[in-house]
Length: 416
Image 1 (cartoon, one colour):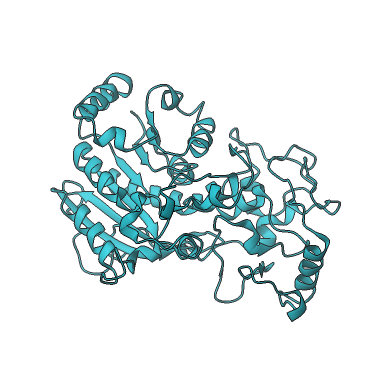
Image 2: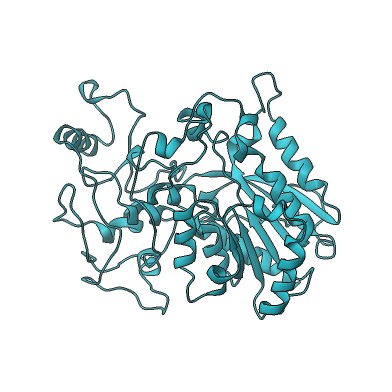
C-alpha cells in the first residue's frame, strides 16, 4: 500500500474515517452495528475501496472477538488483497457507543446502571482487537462524561474511565496517553469536548516519552483554532423563499466564504455553483405557534418570553457569529435543540452535517428523523437496539476537520 491504512471500529456514519482519508489514510476494514449508519459509510466509499462492502466489513464486533480463527483469517485476507503483512496496519480507531456516558444520553435514557448497558463494555473488545492486530497507532474516542461515570450507584466517580485506561495500558508494547480536548480548538464550529486516548507502538514512540500532557508529549496535535462563524458556514444555504415543511433542491446562492467553497467542492474538486443540486435540505414542518416562538427568538437575540416557554429541553438560537469565547454548542442527536439564526426553523440535515464539517457530497442513508423508543431504546425492558436516523448519525460522528488534523499528526509520527 502506498498510503497508510486504517481500520475503523464502531465507525458510525464515517466522520472519523472521512477526516483520516482527507489526511491521506486508506480504509481497509470497517465495523458498525447499525445498518443505516453502515450503509452511509459504505455508500460514500464505493469508489474509494469497493472491497469494504465485498469483503472487509462486519456489523457486530462480537463476531470478530468470539471466533477463534477470525483474526488469522483476516490477516491472511489483508495479505492477499492489500499486500499488508501482520504488524503493518498503521492505525486502528474506534469510538464505542456512548449511551449512558454522555450528558444528553443520560438525560434522555432510562434509569439503569451503566454496567447494565452492553454498549458500555465495548472498549474491552476494542482493546482485544488492538492487541491482536498490533497496529502502529490506535485511537480511542469518547464523550467527556466517560471521565466521571461510575458503573453503578454505589460505585466511585471516574471508575469506568480508570477501567478503560487499564484495558488499553495492559496491551504490551505500547505507550499510551490521553487528554480531554475541545473540537473548537481544531477548526470545528462546536465546543464539543471529547476524551481522546492514543496508543503508539514502542518502535514508533521513542521520541514521545517526555513530560507534560498528551499534546505536549506529541501523542495529539497542537490546537489550530480557525473555527468558522455560522453565517460563514451556513449562509449560502439560506433560501429566502423557503417554505415550512418544504425543501430546497438547488443552491440558492453562490459560495462566498472559503469554508463554503470547501464544503461545496465535489470529489473531483469542482465547487458547486448557484442552481446546482443540493441534497438533504428539507425543512421540518413546524406548527404556527412554534414558528412564532422561533421568530420571537430571532428578533430578541434568543430570549423567549415566559408565555412561549415549554417544558421540553431548552432550545437555543444559533448565533451568526461567535463571541470572544468561541463556539458554545455541541451537535447532538436532536436537531430541535437549536434554532436557525435567521429563519424560524431548526436546521436541515445538510446544515446539521456542516456543523460536523461533512462536505455537501456526503450522502446519508436511513430515515431523516425518528423519536420515542425507536431512538432511545428501553434498557429497563431489555430493548437496546435503536434507530439511527440521519440527524442522529451526524450528531454521533467525530467532526471531520478534527479527524483530519488527528490523521495529519499521526502521519507525521509514522513518517518520522
